[in-house]
View (cartoon, rainbow, N blue to C red):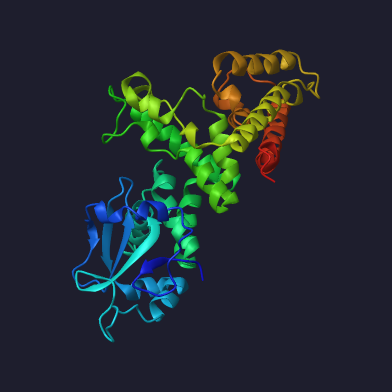
Length: 366
């Protein structure tokens, strides 16, 4: 059984915990009850150290913890430590109930416990760029204390924001286009008090939590989204002066969360994506007209030239370019012949599917 806590229950302390050195000074810290996770009818108090060194207290219901965590159930099944010289008085209590000092941080414990008291998931907002940051503590403790149902719920919420299929990617793309148009109509760039960047998932934090906690399903889409962003587009830097960039629909990433391996994967992927983009010019627009129709070659060249000159941002996005190749009739009036246009559509669709399937290899995720 992994160590969970100390004080009230025998054998639960963990002197090797990284927080044990901080706990030596806990008597000098001011205790603080959590503003919402402190219930008058709670049957146990859990406490944990906050970042500043003070201890925060959570009064919650032991039955809820035991129902979801076999580790907690085993811990609470043990008889509590009794005060020295007493046969009935519990050694460690707080506010009249058993008190357990947790080895986890107060932020992690808050995130973890909130999940149990929010069964409908109202704390989770779809496409919220802060979701990975907010649920990281809960996911960490869900794995530590073997709360399998909670772990699955968190992962499902994360997966809902990051497509696992090309059809899902296209659906998210369409939603993003609609959102961008809504924001472009506002002088402040805000809708309901939020910028576009506040309404779409943020890839770097998604990569971090997926890499640290074994959620490979969201990595291909998150890395692809990150590959489309400039390293200058930093989450914190842009929010220090939001009117300069966020107002105009800029997208950002929490670049500081990436480690060396992440960055190497990103660089590798960007090079291969650039190669896929270059290949469109030869594999799709460089083909000869099977009917030898006059003007087909020029029409193909003009289409490719348009993509290169008038869509510089999407040139980093081969999935987007290939998508446009499948609907040339909505973009151009001077088209290649009917047979060539149909061929371009078929080839572009095929290459798009192949590229999506290859994303794990593109970003060295295999």
